[in-house]
Length: 345
Image 1 (cartoon, rainbow, N blue to C red):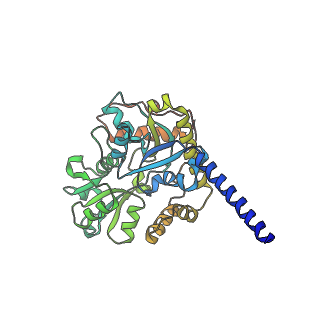
Image 2 (image 1 turned 135 degrees about the horizontal axis):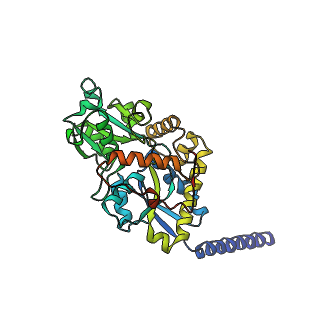
Image 3 (image 1 turned 90 degrees about the horizontal axis):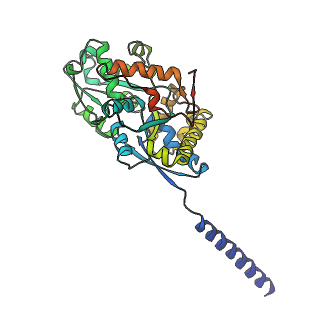
């Protein structure tokens, strides 16, 4: 009986300890939530954002990041401007486009994400014998990420540059929205609603592996980059509104630092480890993402810093893609106080 009483006492003590822990955890206030609009999910150029909650980079900075995925940069910017999010992961040249339409735009980039823009012009495989070069797209339907009234996406700007590189004008093709998801774009190609599309990875390589498309031009190919002024432009950036910076600078600092943790983690881990961390259920998607990460080893910034040479490339790209638009002061679209701007690539 004495032994039984001793065991009972231990159980009561353990229960009281567990109850105390539960109360302590329950008393912990929830972490401040930060909503980030981002293209995806699992778009290659935006993976650092998908990784943030997976590795607890946000919790390390005392915040909880909630990702709000969308199919294109136009939608992402709309979410930011309508105050449905406090931050957005978006192509930097889309911000420049917005500035030409709205001189009072208060959206600025606070960190760089992707050092290499990964756009591919893919064409339906059925057209392989008919479309040998970009000029052969004349009269055909080409899809791009959804732009908005106030901002032309990087994909749209790139398409216009690609067309001009082979003697075509924008009016020589019919440009349409390629949809808000991979499924929509796949079906539009499958049912010939569009003949070609400016795509990002890993969607482009997935379609290629499935035999659905062929690559006509790619920014990973020197033959293409040699024809595109400023082809190494800054693509993905972390952006926010000036009112967030003015009213909640600590929130910006924590978000930038969380992104920095994600970029540092990627730089010190293998593609296999990154894919495993993302916990992707579809084995085909896992394999394709792994192959793309191996194919583009210098994709991401290691520290989020802006680079002067890349800024110069971005200025060159935008001015050539938008010859009739006024010059944009890029420095006014960057707030580098949290990451800095360095001279070398």
